[in-house]
Amino acid sequence: MVVYIEYALIENFLLDGLLLYLAVFTAKNTVKFGRLTLSAAVGAVGALALPLLPVAAFWAYPIKCIGGAGLCFLANGKKRFFRVCGAFFAYSFAFAGAMFAFFSFQAQTGGYFLSQSGVTFVVCLGVILTLICVACVKRLKKRRAIYRHIYACKIRYQNREIRVDGFLDSGNFANLKGQAVCFLAPDVAYDLFSDEFWDKDGGQVQDELQISTLGGVKTLPAFLGVIEITTDEKTVVKQVYLAISANILSKEYKLLLHSRILDD
Image (tube, rainbow, N blue to C red; front, side, top):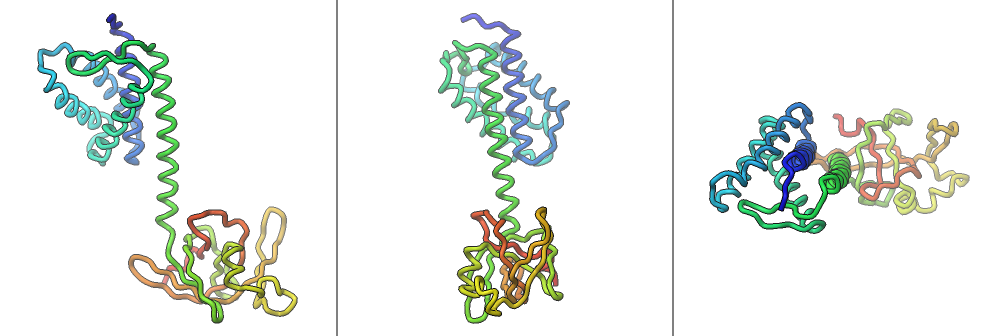
């Protein structure tokens, strides 16, 4: 098998750079491209030098593990080091599996080498996998950020009670007659208020809330109720106005809490 050293260097440099970028990004650290470039270059040279060293194949794997940790340190430093290492090795195994699935490999002393694939194709596959991983990590981070602000709630209105998950909305500053306003999804509001939601002309709606939207001023029915919010530290019980919002489309929560409702 003929190996062109410049192609091998470029291939290893780019793949190491992608893996290190993903590891640092996943660990929520700042990506420093100068350090990342240096680390990827060291990794590319090391990947070519390792098969030439007079070591038994058994020792190649410990050397790779130590070398991978060293690359993570060069690219990132001490901050969340073990998290970066874990992500780096996890992505390395995942990328290696993808490469095995797409390309043919030949066994050599100390590891495996691509036997029938162009550098461009390998790098393009690496870039595609990187973009997929970045998108997945961003989605997971977004969901995690949402779940950090979701609380188990119990809403009481007259003789009815309902349990629902509520999201602490930092942008909700709505108040009515000195009381905080929380917003319910229509399906939950219908179960809680029953026919009162529709009987506006019958005098069942206790108050009305006016909010400004892009389409102008909108009037919403508001009902005075009690919310019990359970957090890890305490249980908060407060009287609030409950209004209906058709904009709550999330499956994770059905209630938008007032931004200051957890304040004493």
